[in-house]
Image (cartoon, rainbow, N blue to C red; front, side, top):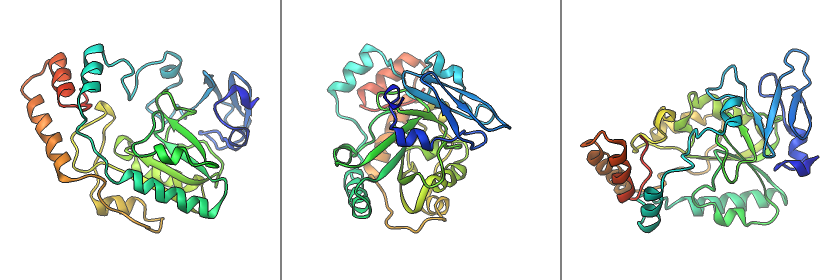
Length: 276
């Protein structure tokens, strides 16, 4: 059965209904809640279960059945793609790679085969290249967008896993895109084993990105309060003031036109992914 899915057999056994937290009966085309009070059937698309609580999520099963572009534009256009391949990006995360290396070392010191949940993992996160190559680590990459790495569609407000399933959670550039960040952090806490680790990066000095899926920003203190149930190992800025200045300059230029095409051209020429 596991061969029909992108998830391992062990993770399939630990999946739970995002509505009532009951166990799920797995078939190649759907997952069925076995709880008497729920009984929801969740579709499977290209080996990827769609485990959403439709009553609370802003996403629906039909979004994925009809393969709508939700967060990421999977077809940005030839001109934009061509220019962005030629020009350097304004985005530079100088801390992610060493941070992920340290996370991998901490996990491997505790377990020979740690499990990591990636929330927002439809594409490979910035700086994760070396960590992905570490042998023995199982990654469960989830998102609300069908992408090249998506194994499971789920909403971070209702993570569909058994308590204590994971040794670590990575939630990189996600929490400013969710409606209720505190609930999402609490859900991460729920699916972590005791003494599990969480790695989070969240925007502060950044303009709106992600269009209608951008909700809030956090100071360092506000971000720390989100994770008050956790003991802090290390925190700090992931990029410098020059990036914030570059983003501000970009949006200053974009303010001179309301044409979507012109704004896409400006964004491409500046080497970034502005949202319109």
